[in-house]
Length: 318
Image 1 (cartoon, rainbow, N blue to C red):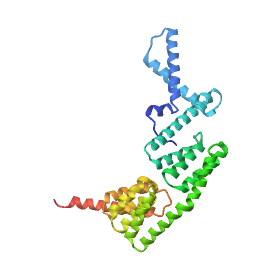
Image 2 (tube, rainbow, N blue to C red):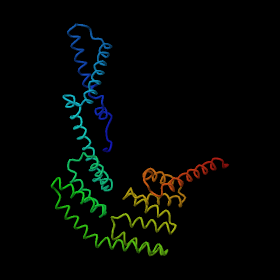
Image 3 (cartoon, rainbow, N blue to C red):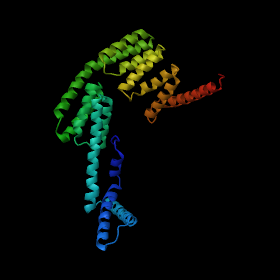
Image 4 (cartoon, rainbow, N blue to C red):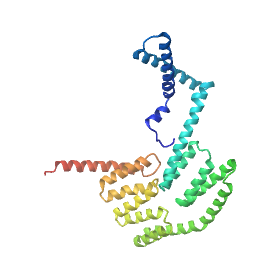
């Protein structure tokens, strides 16, 4: 489904009542006016409204039946034409939100919307969207594996569409070559950080994480490592700040969302911890993460603590 962005008038126009009310209302008004003119009877509002209601009701049932049958003129007027209009409107909504995310440089949101648009089946040129996704992951989000996936997807689609094939093949070769050098360097640096943490060499781990951040400024992983190191140093306020930055860059970073709630709780920022646990469960509660039960228990315990603190405060003498 496209992002919702409709006013009440638009919702009415897309409902099953629009054609009967507008069409039946117009026909009913015309017929009643003709009847008054031919018979010379005076215009009576109650008679007019009753006549109109009957015509609209008949129009509604006829409209429903013609849509159900989906044949002949009924399908032409109420079926195919309606579907074409709806599809056009939904495509425009998708395009508007994708463009808005791009203007705001919210590339994670843009990628998410592009994937949703592709899955909707409404996109006229899916190979172009696949290429756009691949370029987003390669150039903006710095996620080469995801970029490779979408370049390969574009290559599959280009066999049908006959476009972007050469560009996709070139990008795949480029990423494979880069993976043999930069990925190796990145993994080696990550291993050094992990080893320093294992040996409780926090200052060394901090320096290496900052160097990793300098070399790969668009990646969220170095910021996450800085959060982990700050937590190990019991600087939970700084850890929370790092985890927040990770989530601003990558809202679906499950571990950062989990660690943020823990950091708030250890810093005794109970209200922020409660909100963080709730956000975590809202976003990841339906996944198979191993942290779901821990999050649920922590939220229950925190709610009980907040209730107890409130009760104590209310009974304290002034």
